[in-house]
Amino acid sequence: DYRRGGYHAVRIGDAFKGGRYIVQSKLGWGHFSTVWLAWDTLMSQFVALKVQKSAQHYTEAALDEITILKQIAEGDPDGNKSVVKLLDHFKHSGPNGQHVCMVFENLGDNLLTLIKYTGYKGLPIHKVKELCFHILVGLDYLHRQLSIIHTDLKPENILLCSMIDPSKDLRKSGAPLILPDNKDVKGHVTFNGNVNKNQKKKIRRKAKEAAQGFAGKKAVESSLNAKSNADFPIDQLVGLASVNRSSNADAATASGKEHVGSKRGSGSRRRKTLESVDLKCKLVDFGNACWTYKQFTDNIQTRQYRCPEVILGSKYSTSADLWSFACICFELATGDMLFDPHSGDNFDRDEDHLALMMELLGTMPRKVRESTFNHFKVITLACSHFINMLCPFQIALGGRYSREFFNRHGDLRHIRRLRFWPLDKVLVEKYEFSEQDAKDLADFLIPILEFVPEKRPTAAQCLLHPWINAGPNSSKPRVPDVQSKVTDTGNSEKIKSVKERTEA
Ligand code: ATP
Ligand code: MG
Ligand code: MG
Image 1 (spheres, rainbow, N blue to C red):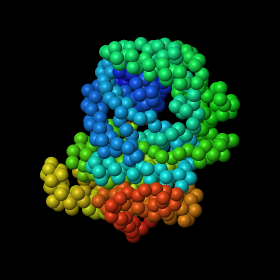
Image 2 (cartoon, rainbow, N blue to C red; image 1 turned 180 degrees about the horizontal axis):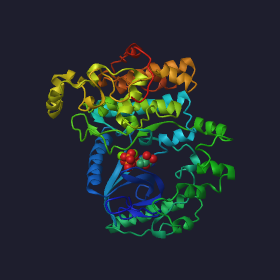
Image 3 (cartoon, rainbow, N blue to C red; image 1 turned 60 degrees about the horizontal axis):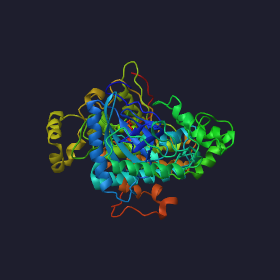
Image 4 (cartoon, protein in one colour; image 1 turned 135 degrees about the horizontal axis):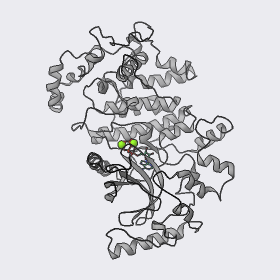
């Protein structure tokens, strides 16, 4: 992907926007971009710099992302709506083309890292509730105030506001600041863009102040001169920062090496660290977001978090995010993905996905799977917003692809026998939840995992559910003017028989 149209090869110490942002370490990456911790010499703060791939469709996606991010930032001047804040954006030219760059407030680890950190065992329930509360605050803001659908909600796109291990946090670790172009920490800055004299002066002064403010004063020449490329391991840099302050054992913990999959010895330390982590989180990655009234594609969501209406090719709205939210909530609590479909010899991944859903939630109601009025649906889609306002029942019609999956009896075409295993039982039997914890979590999640999208509770309604509302968060300010009525769909009634699932 490091070729024309692809990623820009960023090096530690690289300067962006005429010397204003200096890259310190790698924070993460995705299919569209690489994301870097950078020092903002003008504002004297750490920021996250997202450098988009350069091909035209990535650039267009980034410009749409910026439009949405600006709207989000305007509506949230205090930054307390659990959504990441865009600070700046610009273009950067490199050997692979011109890359749109976005500058964000710097956040901590993503929730997948957190799940890995538990050894894929899941978080204590009170921590899951805390995270869910903040995710729902973010979703409620996007949905109700801005009519924005995130469309790619998944653990990688939700970030803690702090690092799991504070010694990994360059902002607090006392790590020496890396300045551009192999210059030293005294604040000598070189510029590679069009920066006027005043700006240069200001940047130089800020950089110098910043350098002075940092402990150590020993230049990290080694890391600057090291073959630091786009895959520069953050641990190497963090290791450097933490050597002086921690024992070898702690440094090993800081490097994260013993976290994933390691069971012996580290469990209690992990739990202890976890207890001290502030679990506020924010939603990031609006690269695929859209508005309810302006959608860009039918092909949304990452596979495991995809809702049934998208698989079936029906209309989707903000409730699609709620489905993903429920999948994430389950994953946080158990460490496992709720649905992880695979194709088989005679069925594809979509059909397996629908089968997994029905094994957990019961058969799909007729109106969701039937596509009798398909031709009519096409017309309604064409002028969907207007017509759906007038005839909201249309959205219950089956999707374009329904007939590919279901026969006229309502059975899947290739996967015939399904084994119903309801959520509360799964939680007890597979994940060793207590009966009470399982019932409570299932009572919260089952209405959100409703096949009929309009029957799903909204984020605002979820915030009022006792599973979220009672307990540690109950003293927090609630979402105002919410009509509370969480749908209980009586899911268990839907299952008539217990069947065994095999390939047809
Ligand atoms: P995707 O493949 O999901 O579309 P993407 O290329 O659009 O990803 P992002 O999801 O925005 O990129 O960012 C990739 C990763 O970078 C995130 O999962 C996260 O680990 C890290 N990251 C993004 N934004 C920040 C931030 N503001 N602070 C800290 N880390 C961040
Ligand atoms: Mg992402
Ligand atoms: Mg993205």
